[in-house]
Length: 347
Image 1 (cartoon, rainbow, N blue to C red):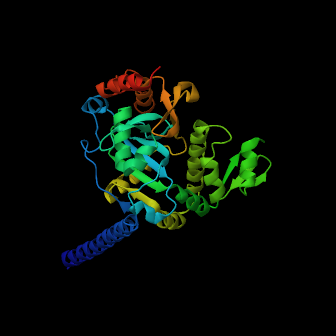
Image 2 (cartoon, helix red, strand yellow):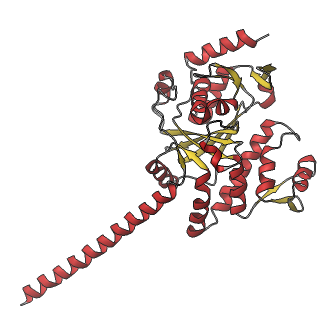
Image 3 (cartoon, rainbow, N blue to C red):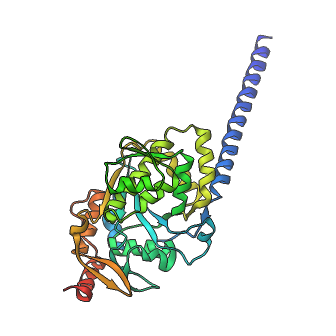
């Protein structure tokens, strides 16, 4: 009788365990399906192979030991969500490289100067300013341009309408920035921002204007402002609860175009839980700002376009920032690019 009772007890425990496991698996599955349903709201484009993205084998050989993923981020001038479906794209007003360093558990943001003279590869095959690559052929051509001119290994990208920034700032109830009295402070006041001393509260429209203004200084300062707004948004998001975050994600995903798959996005997000998200490393290329410019030129009716002093140094600098590789040797493509630019435009 005791053995029979023990067997019945064991069967009951196994039954309970089976039900619990089934419930857990069901929750995981339903949660996964829900997340996929959200992510499917993004506008998707095709995956890029290394060959598609014009990644140089010389570059791959030098970065293969690093556990770093580089993702291009394009903030474009598109005014409406629907415009992402038209491949008369707009200029990428902000071009950044988001580097996920899985060894150091940190994120690096590298901003690229929009008016830099670069070579846009096929099918365009001509010199132009950096932010025109997105205009000439959408994010895929812009990715090619980044790999070709800076010795990068990018196949993944995220693009958003710059107007989407306005929506996101409003969804986090605005951001606060500190500014000294001066032209920029007056600019944000004129745009409708409120102030408490030197702290200014910006809603969506004011934040967008703050990111884009160049009349008070130059594009290098504007890149700093863009990164500042990104960090302020992250700070506000970190204070939201899960339900609030899901609501924000639900609102914002239709503004996003990417060639990342759902699984890639989920894997990156889960990995980021172990990252130090309070301290993001930020860089600019070129790091010396206006002092890196050798000459301001006009080409194909566009000006200003900045011819940089040394394109090999730009590639070295970028690899030092992202990979902390002080001995990086630019590829033969960069060496040839430097020679071609000097021959075409140099004094």
